[in-house]
Amino acid sequence: MPTWLITGCSSGLGRHLAHAVLEQGWNAVVTARDAGTLQDVAAAYPRTALPLDLDVSVQEQIDAAMSQAEARFGGVDVLVNNAGHGYRAAVEEGEQDDVTELFATNFFGPVALTKAVLPGMRARRHGAIVNVSSIAGRYSAPGSGYYAATKFALEGLSDALRKEVGPLGIRVVVVEPGAFRTDFAGRSLRQPPTAIADYAETAGLRRKENDTSHGRQPGDPARAARTIVEVVTGPEAPFRLLLGSDAITGVEAELDTQREEIRAWEEISRSTDFSG
Image (cartoon, rainbow, N blue to C red; front, side, top):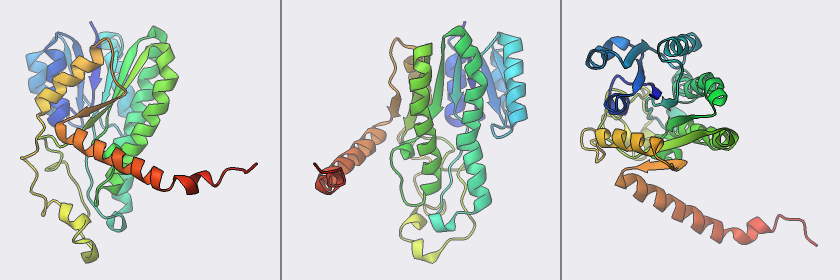
């Protein structure tokens, strides 16, 4: 019976993932900053669910979670780095403490958890690491520069990781959701208190007080969770898994723009080679 460790299970995609895994009869270490929010999950699956407090930015809590997972289930077969939050600000508006915390949660936390599970996965020559990114890991919108930077970093790390651990039997999947009907654009979305007027028509349009998309997003998180479970445990899996029709549309448009720019500047780009 496989054991999953899923971060950020208090709500949204993480909570739906916890249910999708447990409904299969598998073990799941379900974590949140406050495990009290997961007691209903533990009550529904008393033998296979292990709720734990886990702030992914605190190494001591990561170590404790790994110890408890190994003691209860014998190890972790699938790690899902899902915990994270958004941050909306023009680059100039971003506050250093906020940005530092954002990277600690969205990037360095997944790195630390990945390093914690890899020794066991390498020993077993089996496992999967699922890093929940975003379409913001492919391109960035005004006001999302810092958030996108965490996801670009996560995807770059994951690309190298898959080439390092693939030969050892370990699968790496990056999940890139579009807009899903979760708390991401609501309670979980953070922003600086002060806005700069010059950015009102760019980053300012996407501040929480101006964003009307919350609660109307096209993506269904329950369907996304079931899809992730099916793909990760199937015979084959992509490195990057786009979720949502809006994700496909957005990424295809970005790739087309990049190809057009490469072609437009190809002659100048090639001119930098040694001649002769």
